[in-house]
Image: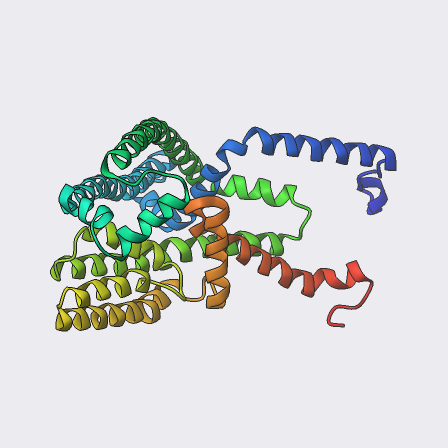
Length: 370
Protein backbone atom coordinates (compact mmCIF):
# COMPACT_ATOMS: atom_id res chain seq x y z
CA UNK A 1 0.00 0.00 0.00
CA UNK A 2 1.32 3.38 -0.99
CA UNK A 3 2.05 5.88 1.76
CA UNK A 4 1.38 8.84 -0.51
CA UNK A 5 -1.68 10.62 0.96
CA UNK A 6 -2.54 12.10 -2.41
CA UNK A 7 -3.48 8.64 -3.67
CA UNK A 8 -6.07 8.05 -0.90
CA UNK A 9 -7.31 11.61 -0.29
CA UNK A 10 -10.70 12.64 -1.63
CA UNK A 11 -10.20 14.57 -4.90
CA UNK A 12 -11.11 18.25 -4.69
CA UNK A 13 -14.42 19.15 -6.26
CA UNK A 14 -14.71 22.01 -8.73
CA UNK A 15 -15.70 25.32 -7.11
CA UNK A 16 -18.94 25.45 -9.11
CA UNK A 17 -19.92 21.95 -7.99
CA UNK A 18 -19.11 22.75 -4.37
CA UNK A 19 -21.12 25.98 -4.50
CA UNK A 20 -24.05 24.23 -6.16
CA UNK A 21 -24.01 21.38 -3.64
CA UNK A 22 -23.84 23.86 -0.75
CA UNK A 23 -26.84 25.77 -2.08
CA UNK A 24 -28.85 22.59 -2.61
CA UNK A 25 -27.85 21.21 0.80
CA UNK A 26 -28.79 24.42 2.65
CA UNK A 27 -32.02 24.62 0.65
CA UNK A 28 -32.96 21.06 1.55
CA UNK A 29 -32.06 21.73 5.19
CA UNK A 30 -34.29 24.81 5.20
CA UNK A 31 -37.11 22.79 3.61
CA UNK A 32 -36.64 20.13 6.30
CA UNK A 33 -36.88 22.75 9.05
CA UNK A 34 -40.02 24.15 7.41
CA UNK A 35 -41.51 20.65 7.11
CA UNK A 36 -40.95 19.93 10.80
CA UNK A 37 -41.59 23.50 12.02
CA UNK A 38 -44.80 22.39 13.70
CA UNK A 39 -42.85 19.88 15.79
CA UNK A 40 -39.84 21.97 16.81
CA UNK A 41 -41.21 22.44 20.32
CA UNK A 42 -41.83 18.70 20.55
CA UNK A 43 -38.23 17.96 19.55
CA UNK A 44 -36.79 20.48 22.01
CA UNK A 45 -38.91 19.26 24.92
CA UNK A 46 -38.13 15.66 24.02
CA UNK A 47 -34.41 16.44 24.02
CA UNK A 48 -34.73 18.10 27.42
CA UNK A 49 -36.58 15.16 28.97
CA UNK A 50 -34.25 12.67 27.29
CA UNK A 51 -31.27 14.46 28.81
CA UNK A 52 -33.01 14.55 32.19
CA UNK A 53 -34.06 10.88 32.23
CA UNK A 54 -30.98 9.45 30.50
CA UNK A 55 -29.40 8.35 33.83
CA UNK A 56 -32.64 6.53 34.69
CA UNK A 57 -32.57 4.77 31.31
CA UNK A 58 -28.97 3.69 31.85
CA UNK A 59 -29.94 2.35 35.30
CA UNK A 60 -32.92 0.40 33.89
CA UNK A 61 -31.11 -0.99 30.82
CA UNK A 62 -28.94 -3.66 32.52
CA UNK A 63 -31.91 -4.72 34.66
CA UNK A 64 -33.91 -5.67 31.55
CA UNK A 65 -30.94 -7.60 30.11
CA UNK A 66 -29.89 -4.83 27.73
CA UNK A 67 -33.19 -4.69 25.82
CA UNK A 68 -33.25 -1.08 24.71
CA UNK A 69 -36.87 -0.99 23.57
CA UNK A 70 -38.15 -2.27 26.93
CA UNK A 71 -35.92 0.09 28.92
CA UNK A 72 -36.93 3.04 26.75
CA UNK A 73 -40.60 2.11 27.01
CA UNK A 74 -40.44 1.98 30.81
CA UNK A 75 -38.63 5.32 31.06
CA UNK A 76 -40.96 6.96 28.50
CA UNK A 77 -43.91 5.74 30.57
CA UNK A 78 -42.29 7.31 33.62
CA UNK A 79 -41.96 10.61 31.72
CA UNK A 80 -45.63 10.44 30.72
CA UNK A 81 -46.79 9.75 34.28
CA UNK A 82 -44.51 12.45 35.71
CA UNK A 83 -46.12 15.02 33.43
CA UNK A 84 -49.70 13.82 33.01
CA UNK A 85 -50.70 13.33 36.66
CA UNK A 86 -49.57 16.78 37.95
CA UNK A 87 -51.00 18.53 34.88
CA UNK A 88 -54.35 16.75 35.16
CA UNK A 89 -54.58 17.60 38.88
CA UNK A 90 -53.56 21.19 38.25
CA UNK A 91 -56.01 21.77 35.39
CA UNK A 92 -58.89 20.20 37.34
CA UNK A 93 -58.10 22.15 40.51
CA UNK A 94 -57.70 25.44 38.68
CA UNK A 95 -61.01 24.93 36.86
CA UNK A 96 -62.84 24.26 40.13
CA UNK A 97 -61.16 27.13 41.97
CA UNK A 98 -61.73 29.51 39.07
CA UNK A 99 -65.45 28.70 39.12
CA UNK A 100 -65.61 29.13 42.91
CA UNK A 101 -63.71 32.41 42.71
CA UNK A 102 -66.22 33.69 40.13
CA UNK A 103 -69.24 32.50 42.16
CA UNK A 104 -67.91 34.04 45.37
CA UNK A 105 -67.24 37.33 43.62
CA UNK A 106 -70.68 37.45 42.01
CA UNK A 107 -72.49 36.40 45.20
CA UNK A 108 -70.94 39.33 47.08
CA UNK A 109 -72.28 41.87 44.60
CA UNK A 110 -76.01 42.46 45.09
CA UNK A 111 -78.34 44.60 43.01
CA UNK A 112 -78.78 47.05 45.89
CA UNK A 113 -75.01 47.46 46.11
CA UNK A 114 -74.78 48.13 42.39
CA UNK A 115 -77.56 50.76 42.56
CA UNK A 116 -75.96 52.38 45.60
CA UNK A 117 -72.49 52.48 44.06
CA UNK A 118 -73.58 53.69 40.61
CA UNK A 119 -76.71 55.76 41.17
CA UNK A 120 -76.65 56.80 44.84
CA UNK A 121 -74.89 59.72 46.47
CA UNK A 122 -71.16 60.12 46.67
CA UNK A 123 -68.04 60.80 44.67
CA UNK A 124 -68.30 57.82 42.30
CA UNK A 125 -71.99 58.19 41.26
CA UNK A 126 -71.69 61.96 40.80
CA UNK A 127 -68.58 61.74 38.63
CA UNK A 128 -69.98 58.78 36.68
CA UNK A 129 -73.13 60.81 35.97
CA UNK A 130 -71.04 63.83 34.92
CA UNK A 131 -68.87 61.73 32.56
CA UNK A 132 -71.96 60.11 31.05
CA UNK A 133 -73.51 63.54 30.39
CA UNK A 134 -70.31 64.78 28.74
CA UNK A 135 -70.30 61.66 26.54
CA UNK A 136 -73.96 62.16 25.64
CA UNK A 137 -75.10 58.97 27.40
CA UNK A 138 -78.10 58.34 29.59
CA UNK A 139 -77.22 57.55 33.18
CA UNK A 140 -80.12 55.82 34.90
CA UNK A 141 -80.77 52.17 35.84
CA UNK A 142 -82.84 51.21 32.78
CA UNK A 143 -80.28 52.61 30.30
CA UNK A 144 -77.37 50.96 32.09
CA UNK A 145 -79.32 47.69 32.28
CA UNK A 146 -79.87 47.76 28.51
CA UNK A 147 -76.18 48.36 27.96
CA UNK A 148 -75.32 45.49 30.29
CA UNK A 149 -77.68 43.15 28.42
CA UNK A 150 -75.97 44.04 25.15
CA UNK A 151 -72.56 43.62 26.73
CA UNK A 152 -73.54 40.26 28.23
CA UNK A 153 -74.50 39.02 24.77
CA UNK A 154 -71.07 40.00 23.47
CA UNK A 155 -69.43 38.33 26.47
CA UNK A 156 -71.44 35.14 25.91
CA UNK A 157 -70.32 35.04 22.29
CA UNK A 158 -66.72 35.60 23.34
CA UNK A 159 -66.89 32.89 26.01
CA UNK A 160 -68.43 30.43 23.53
CA UNK A 161 -65.57 31.08 21.12
CA UNK A 162 -63.02 30.68 23.90
CA UNK A 163 -64.54 27.35 24.97
CA UNK A 164 -64.35 26.05 21.42
CA UNK A 165 -60.74 27.23 21.20
CA UNK A 166 -59.96 25.61 24.55
CA UNK A 167 -61.27 22.25 23.34
CA UNK A 168 -59.19 22.62 20.19
CA UNK A 169 -56.10 23.53 22.25
CA UNK A 170 -56.59 20.50 24.51
CA UNK A 171 -56.77 18.18 21.49
CA UNK A 172 -53.68 19.85 19.98
CA UNK A 173 -51.76 19.62 23.27
CA UNK A 174 -52.66 15.93 23.60
CA UNK A 175 -51.44 15.26 20.05
CA UNK A 176 -48.13 17.05 20.61
CA UNK A 177 -47.73 15.33 23.98
CA UNK A 178 -47.95 11.93 22.26
CA UNK A 179 -45.50 13.05 19.55
CA UNK A 180 -43.05 14.23 22.21
CA UNK A 181 -43.25 10.87 24.00
CA UNK A 182 -42.56 9.03 20.74
CA UNK A 183 -39.50 11.21 20.16
CA UNK A 184 -38.31 10.58 23.73
CA UNK A 185 -38.68 6.82 23.18
CA UNK A 186 -36.56 6.76 20.01
CA UNK A 187 -34.04 9.29 21.35
CA UNK A 188 -33.36 6.98 24.30
CA UNK A 189 -32.98 3.95 22.05
CA UNK A 190 -30.86 5.61 19.35
CA UNK A 191 -29.10 8.37 21.31
CA UNK A 192 -25.57 7.28 20.39
CA UNK A 193 -26.41 6.89 16.70
CA UNK A 194 -28.20 10.25 16.54
CA UNK A 195 -25.32 12.06 18.24
CA UNK A 196 -22.80 10.37 15.95
CA UNK A 197 -24.80 11.46 12.90
CA UNK A 198 -25.03 15.04 14.22
CA UNK A 199 -21.30 15.18 15.00
CA UNK A 200 -20.32 13.79 11.59
CA UNK A 201 -22.65 16.21 9.78
CA UNK A 202 -21.59 19.32 11.66
CA UNK A 203 -18.46 21.13 10.37
CA UNK A 204 -17.41 22.08 13.91
CA UNK A 205 -14.67 20.22 15.77
CA UNK A 206 -16.05 17.39 17.85
CA UNK A 207 -15.06 18.92 21.19
CA UNK A 208 -17.07 22.06 20.34
CA UNK A 209 -20.07 19.99 19.28
CA UNK A 210 -19.88 18.07 22.56
CA UNK A 211 -19.71 21.37 24.47
CA UNK A 212 -22.85 22.71 22.74
CA UNK A 213 -24.81 19.50 23.37
CA UNK A 214 -23.59 19.46 26.99
CA UNK A 215 -24.63 23.10 27.44
CA UNK A 216 -28.09 22.34 26.05
CA UNK A 217 -28.50 19.40 28.41
CA UNK A 218 -27.17 21.29 31.44
CA UNK A 219 -29.48 24.27 30.92
CA UNK A 220 -32.44 21.98 30.30
CA UNK A 221 -31.64 20.08 33.49
CA UNK A 222 -31.21 23.30 35.44
CA UNK A 223 -34.49 24.74 34.13
CA UNK A 224 -36.53 21.56 34.62
CA UNK A 225 -35.01 20.25 37.84
CA UNK A 226 -33.47 23.25 39.56
CA UNK A 227 -35.85 26.06 38.70
CA UNK A 228 -38.81 23.73 38.21
CA UNK A 229 -38.66 21.87 41.52
CA UNK A 230 -37.54 24.96 43.46
CA UNK A 231 -40.37 27.08 42.05
CA UNK A 232 -42.91 24.31 42.65
CA UNK A 233 -41.79 24.09 46.29
CA UNK A 234 -42.31 27.83 46.75
CA UNK A 235 -45.74 27.66 45.09
CA UNK A 236 -46.88 24.66 47.14
CA UNK A 237 -45.72 26.15 50.45
CA UNK A 238 -47.18 29.54 49.51
CA UNK A 239 -50.53 27.98 48.56
CA UNK A 240 -50.66 26.00 51.82
CA UNK A 241 -49.91 29.15 53.82
CA UNK A 242 -52.74 30.97 52.02
CA UNK A 243 -55.13 28.16 52.90
CA UNK A 244 -53.99 28.23 56.54
CA UNK A 245 -54.69 31.96 56.94
CA UNK A 246 -58.05 31.63 55.20
CA UNK A 247 -57.32 33.37 51.89
CA UNK A 248 -59.44 32.15 48.93
CA UNK A 249 -58.30 30.00 45.97
CA UNK A 250 -54.98 28.76 47.41
CA UNK A 251 -54.32 26.36 44.51
CA UNK A 252 -54.91 29.11 41.96
CA UNK A 253 -52.59 31.57 43.70
CA UNK A 254 -50.09 28.84 44.54
CA UNK A 255 -49.84 28.15 40.81
CA UNK A 256 -49.30 31.85 40.15
CA UNK A 257 -46.55 31.80 42.81
CA UNK A 258 -44.89 28.83 41.07
CA UNK A 259 -44.77 30.68 37.76
CA UNK A 260 -43.40 33.90 39.22
CA UNK A 261 -40.89 31.96 41.34
CA UNK A 262 -38.98 31.34 38.10
CA UNK A 263 -38.13 35.07 38.06
CA UNK A 264 -35.17 35.56 40.42
CA UNK A 265 -35.66 39.31 41.00
CA UNK A 266 -39.44 39.12 41.50
CA UNK A 267 -40.44 35.73 42.85
CA UNK A 268 -43.54 35.00 44.88
CA UNK A 269 -43.64 38.56 46.28
CA UNK A 270 -46.01 39.34 43.38
CA UNK A 271 -48.63 37.34 45.30
CA UNK A 272 -47.50 37.54 48.93
CA UNK A 273 -47.44 41.36 49.11
CA UNK A 274 -51.04 41.86 47.83
CA UNK A 275 -52.20 38.94 49.99
CA UNK A 276 -50.57 40.55 53.03
CA UNK A 277 -52.33 43.84 52.25
CA UNK A 278 -55.67 42.00 52.04
CA UNK A 279 -55.07 40.51 55.49
CA UNK A 280 -54.10 43.92 56.89
CA UNK A 281 -57.20 45.58 55.45
CA UNK A 282 -59.28 42.78 56.95
CA UNK A 283 -57.92 43.64 60.38
CA UNK A 284 -55.79 40.50 60.74
CA UNK A 285 -52.59 42.39 61.55
CA UNK A 286 -50.70 39.62 63.37
CA UNK A 287 -51.70 37.03 60.78
CA UNK A 288 -50.60 39.36 57.98
CA UNK A 289 -47.16 39.90 59.51
CA UNK A 290 -46.66 36.18 60.18
CA UNK A 291 -47.83 35.31 56.65
CA UNK A 292 -45.46 37.82 55.06
CA UNK A 293 -42.45 36.84 57.19
CA UNK A 294 -43.04 33.11 56.66
CA UNK A 295 -43.26 33.36 52.86
CA UNK A 296 -40.32 35.74 52.65
CA UNK A 297 -38.15 33.36 54.66
CA UNK A 298 -39.23 30.28 52.71
CA UNK A 299 -38.63 32.06 49.39
CA UNK A 300 -35.12 33.14 50.43
CA UNK A 301 -34.32 29.63 51.71
CA UNK A 302 -35.53 27.89 48.55
CA UNK A 303 -33.80 30.39 46.25
CA UNK A 304 -30.44 30.40 48.02
CA UNK A 305 -30.22 26.84 49.32
CA UNK A 306 -32.48 24.39 47.50
CA UNK A 307 -32.31 25.94 44.02
CA UNK A 308 -28.58 26.53 44.31
CA UNK A 309 -27.93 22.89 45.17
CA UNK A 310 -30.28 21.55 42.50
CA UNK A 311 -28.91 23.80 39.74
CA UNK A 312 -25.26 23.64 40.82
CA UNK A 313 -23.02 24.89 38.01
CA UNK A 314 -25.40 23.86 35.23
CA UNK A 315 -26.65 27.40 34.56
CA UNK A 316 -24.11 29.97 35.72
CA UNK A 317 -25.79 33.17 34.55
CA UNK A 318 -26.33 36.45 36.36
CA UNK A 319 -29.76 36.82 37.99
CA UNK A 320 -30.57 39.87 35.87
CA UNK A 321 -29.76 37.94 32.69
CA UNK A 322 -31.93 35.01 33.81
CA UNK A 323 -34.76 37.44 34.63
CA UNK A 324 -34.57 39.16 31.23
CA UNK A 325 -34.23 35.85 29.36
CA UNK A 326 -37.37 34.47 31.03
CA UNK A 327 -39.38 37.66 30.44
CA UNK A 328 -38.27 37.75 26.80
CA UNK A 329 -38.92 34.03 26.42
CA UNK A 330 -42.47 34.29 27.78
CA UNK A 331 -43.19 37.32 25.55
CA UNK A 332 -41.96 35.39 22.49
CA UNK A 333 -42.89 31.76 23.14
CA UNK A 334 -45.56 31.91 25.84
CA UNK A 335 -45.25 29.71 28.92
CA UNK A 336 -42.54 27.60 27.22
CA UNK A 337 -40.37 30.72 27.30
CA UNK A 338 -39.58 29.71 30.90
CA UNK A 339 -37.36 27.06 29.27
CA UNK A 340 -36.53 28.58 25.90
CA UNK A 341 -35.36 31.97 27.17
CA UNK A 342 -32.49 30.73 29.40
CA UNK A 343 -31.64 28.06 26.83
CA UNK A 344 -31.19 30.57 23.99
CA UNK A 345 -29.09 32.89 26.17
CA UNK A 346 -26.92 30.02 27.45
CA UNK A 347 -26.24 28.75 23.92
CA UNK A 348 -25.38 32.28 22.77
CA UNK A 349 -22.95 32.71 25.68
CA UNK A 350 -21.33 29.37 24.85
CA UNK A 351 -20.95 30.34 21.20
CA UNK A 352 -19.53 33.70 22.29
CA UNK A 353 -16.93 31.89 24.38
CA UNK A 354 -15.99 29.67 21.43
CA UNK A 355 -15.79 32.77 19.21
CA UNK A 356 -13.29 34.46 21.52
CA UNK A 357 -11.22 31.29 21.95
CA UNK A 358 -11.07 29.92 18.41
CA UNK A 359 -12.77 32.04 15.74
CA UNK A 360 -12.20 35.72 16.49
CA UNK A 361 -8.69 35.74 15.07
CA UNK A 362 -9.69 33.95 11.88
CA UNK A 363 -12.74 36.14 11.30
CA UNK A 364 -11.04 39.45 12.09
CA UNK A 365 -7.59 38.47 10.87
CA UNK A 366 -6.00 38.88 14.31
CA UNK A 367 -4.41 36.50 16.77
CA UNK A 368 -6.55 34.97 19.50
CA UNK A 369 -6.35 37.05 22.63
CA UNK A 370 -5.63 40.36 20.80
